[in-house]
Length: 126
Image 1 (spheres, rainbow, N blue to C red):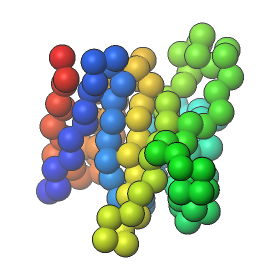
Image 2: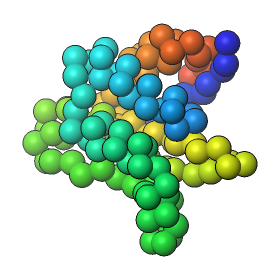
Image 3: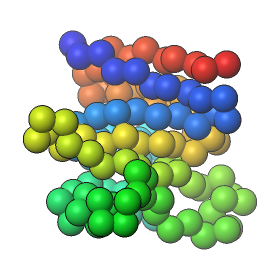
Image 4: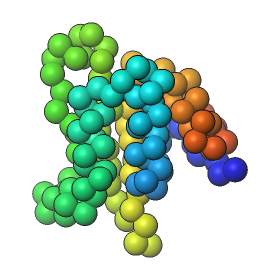
């Protein structure tokens, strides 16, 4: 059983660092637990599936993170799940850091990771 750390920063944003294919599974599992994929989750899934294109874009623009488009009414309703993502390569392995919105419950993320077979550690910065 692999171990994964869910980091919660002082502003209550949650971060998870996973291989690209596992990040896709995590987003799909969270969508299943929440009752469907939100538009920002669908967009992030598209970013991950087209990893090489968006990774090249990030490097050209000197960006560390890509934020999917959000509608103001989604923020008001609390329907935003993913705040931004980071695509990077570690020894040619495609990896993704997903930064979840502060209103997403850390237990949903942990439950989804456990369902994927991970041992979850929650690390809080405060």
